[in-house]
Image (cartoon, rainbow, N blue to C red; front, side, top):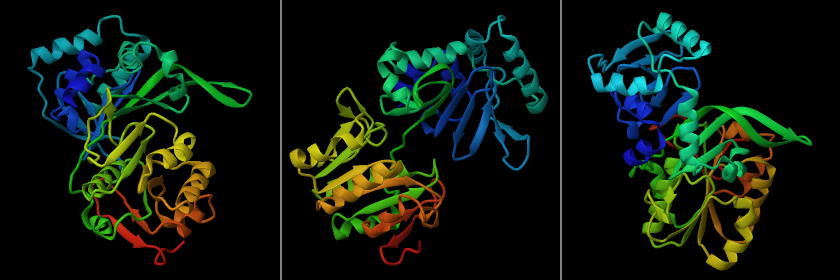
Length: 344
């Protein structure tokens, strides 16, 4: 992952993150916003990266940053790398952001430039943003298993979003393989393939848990088909999986799951299908159809809990899934609810 991040991020950005005192590959997210401070997120929360090294941890309960760790102001190499991105030709907006940040933080943060955004977009798209326009419309692009969320100006036509232009913000989401993270939920694997729905808010570890349960089922020699639409679960690059989804797992990456369900069920004959992030009525209907066909499904869904599904298009899922795994925060306890015990 270190090699991939070095390729994806402009040199100054990567070295600034490295100088924050946190190994880049150990982070959850690296957020790049044009004219704004470089922000990293991990188990510690969120923090602003200093230009000369160090990290100030943000407090969500106060509009201040509470502490600075691993400051390395004497790191000449770090300063030189940062200077590559922050020359004397700063824009007025950048100067304004820098001044405000310095007043609040008490140190000079590393400010992201438009060139930093363009560099990462160029690498991730193979230097052809047009070639990944179908992904950009969905709000992300992928690079070697890393999903990069994008923000900018939306272009609409006939009431539909057709493109993004003037992209000014990127969220580099770093996948993590945590073997053993399934905890008590691992006992479900002993029962054989079951219909399992993982529910949590964004960033609580749904994908990590799905990956681990996929690997555990595969270790039991069950034929698993992983439809990795956003290429986050297995992180396929150049035909190979960078993360361990198991030896009995077949992987389809980068394809919209609704378009391939019917064909792969017939051709691949899986005992279980794994998909990430159900969204909307069409996904809910498709999953119900697959389960009715006799194939077990393991999927994830963004929600605060089971109560959040009441009165939505996803309420029907309580009738087809056998287990509901509820996550509240990364690394937190997994609540295992069996069908019949769930309260909607």
